[in-house]
Length: 188
Image 1 (cartoon, one colour):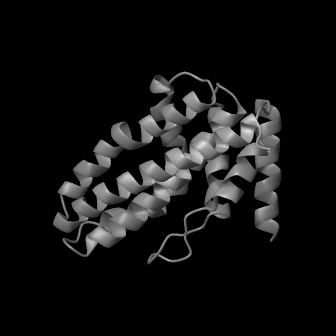
Image 2 (cartoon, rainbow, N blue to C red):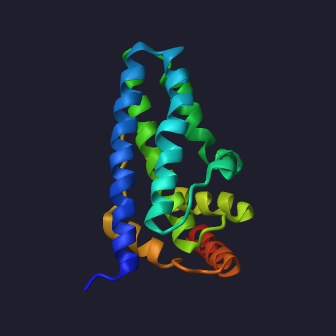
């Protein structure tokens, strides 16, 4: 029997999958023409793909829109997504060949953000800015992109499992779980 938390996590997975596919298509097309079009598309996906994804996921968990905090949160994750963005900007700027790299980076980033947004939303309505960077580091470690030639879509089962593990946690408990999980990843 599926409980409400599992159902919400599965819905968030589907939302992320739809947005990852849309972003991949748009970024592939921008890569066909290369620079400067790919930069314009990158700027456009923040308000058209990422913020709506976050707000829809928050809605699944019964929370309102993030709007004002979104830019602060996205800045907190920059160190963890810098490599993805750098590869995307350099290789994605090459006309025609850039289509492939843009697609891979778009899919990777959208899934990582979808997991982050679900993590944060399942935990509660308020966003603890201090734990966002650590959570993204954990997500990057749990779902690494081992090859710049492909991206493995996270399994629905693992997605649901990790989201359910933090559902309803207080900010302190959530932060402690992230720290313990990061320590485990480092020790492996």
